[in-house]
Length: 159
Ligand SMILES: Nc1nc2c(c(=O)[nH]1)N=C([C@H](O)[C@H](O)COP(=O)(O)OP(=O)(O)OP(=O)(O)O)CN2
Ligand SMILES: [Zn+2]
Image (cartoon, rainbow, N blue to C red):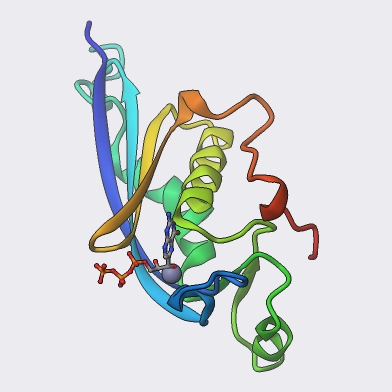
């Protein structure tokens, strides 16, 4: 049998702020993110009659990515943890997800990839489109055992 890669594509809307950035992204702003999740494996054989020919049922993949990532991030303020707006947003009842790292496309792709590996998926890669012209891609095989390193300046343990 041959290894085949399959992909499912998701979108979610979220706000973030790159505090300390010298450009426009230092402002609190939002994106409609597109997430491409690629799974690798050999298609099932006749011993799995329902899923024969599938690497993985797209419906099952959708359900896991939705629960672990999309539903967590959608319509949230994705925060490192030190943004001044957090308290006001929480007071107003807004959804805030503290990630503990600077919410660049690169760091978010690393985080998402690791979350999905931890969920038991045979992740090959994730690609996160932050805008229609900007994306970051992570190959699961490049993530160290124990999880991604986000950089000394990007870590934050504020909860
Ligand atoms: N390497 C990175 N650079 C930037 C990131 C990032 O996560 N990684 N993030 C931002 C901003 O958050 C925002 O995404 C702006 O990005 P940009 O591509 O510049 O957005 P535009 O709307 O200006 O895109 P155009 O297609 O060029 O109009 C900034 N940089
Ligand atoms: Zn942005």
